[in-house]
Image (cartoon, rainbow, N blue to C red; front, side, top):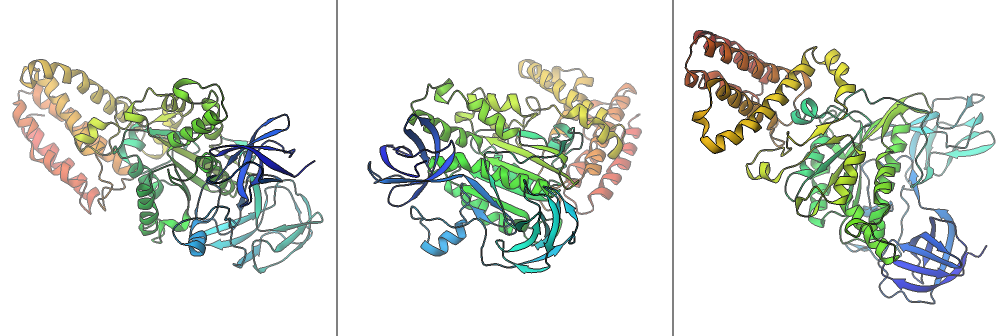
Length: 575
């Protein structure tokens, strides 16, 4: 099998080589500068390679060397708080070497080879261990990094040591094989899990419209499509900060440089509400901006997913944010056109839906090989051109994911944030999560949720009449419905991500707020039946107090006080 050949043809990031005999997805070094690439097509003696770096100046006749290895991610202590590019090169390390601009052909290992980590064994000599089992722990920031037996290794522990080691040094000998703290895993191959569970536990985010109206399960998949400026990135940052996942993997896939800069500067500054330390301590960032080579963008989502699976295997709940899958699909489209493949809808490759499915299917909650429970919840942002949700990436994503949070430019224009449209969004996990909400929040919570969505739907229907004849023409009962819907929209669904109190709303408070709006609805209808004037019912002072209560530091006490006042005021009107 020949390992060195030569370049036959160059077409942007796609290079054709002759004289090597690689396998599909083998990593190769292209040209005199040894640019990193990956074999994506084999036609007889010709190997088609996608190069992860700029190919300007590369010419036919230059050497091509096959490494015989697929693109792998390095997994071990040191991943958390790292910032990588799409092929797991640590960007801070590259910056130290060459400043703000990365030269071609430069590589650096994903994990620091010199740093020593304190390893404490959790098994002893003579124990029998199997693949995926935890054999020791290492403190990594505020987290406990669990060192696992690599897949394919099992047997008796011949030797295991406690002490300080680099990621490459041997910490144990199992079945005659040396085991270090570092593993390598091909990024396109899903890591196995012993058993997958049903998605019946919600991922609590502290965002009212997400948790109460359109919940996502732990190990579930969600999509946030929306036009420019509708708040995809802020919503994902809120999820990263507040969702009850221990590890966050954030993939900036083809985003604009200034947006990625914002993420890179804001994430280290964000305080982790659980520990008080920087949020970055439990985050892995993958930054692949729109001016970086498209091939590396295509690889970045797989790199991020492999890192997420590694932490899931330790027994952690991982939240993976992909921002945005549209740019990933555009990279696929560009490479597909250079390969002269038959284009599908809007020029995207015919296998677009298959690739999206492969990515989202790697989410899930289950039992790991170390008998722990871990999960990966995937939230993919979609940036449809011109906010058109009928384009192929959005439509194919919606076939796969089970939660759809539709961002709306009209809501953004009205300064309603999060700008998630409650009429077009949906969650298919609702039935499976119903029991959890009944048992852990309140028995009547699912019924309250249904009632709130019906009121909002009713308001939408009445809005059409109002536009024709004006609100004064509506019967008094319908005026109350409109007022209740307004309370749901302005008090409950609107949430200020930058307010210290309102940024996070626990489930107990979400329930109290919904219950209070329902209480107003019931008492207002009673007062109306008793002959009270509609203007008096709508202008009770407690309603205004309720609007302000969610921003108060003693918010729960305020809500209880509002409830008492509301009862007094509406009872006085005859409720």
